[in-house]
Amino acid sequence: MSMNSRSDATSSQIMTLSKVAEYFQIHRSTLDRLVRKGKIPYFKIGSDYRFNKDAIDKWMVGRPIKA
Image (cartoon, rainbow, N blue to C red; front, side):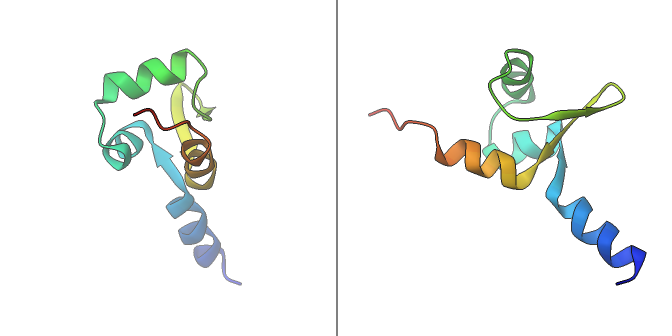
């Protein structure tokens, strides 16, 4: 496997704060609040938040649905 193939596959699984806010269709400040409260799985690279798409998808499935 070439290095570019791995980079392309990995980069599609790692999302920025803006991309996750767009993905969930929520305001960026709402997502930032979830991150600061530790309610959504994330990791940091330097001072930037990053999200693994599989991890946030699993987190979303585990959330209760309120009527």
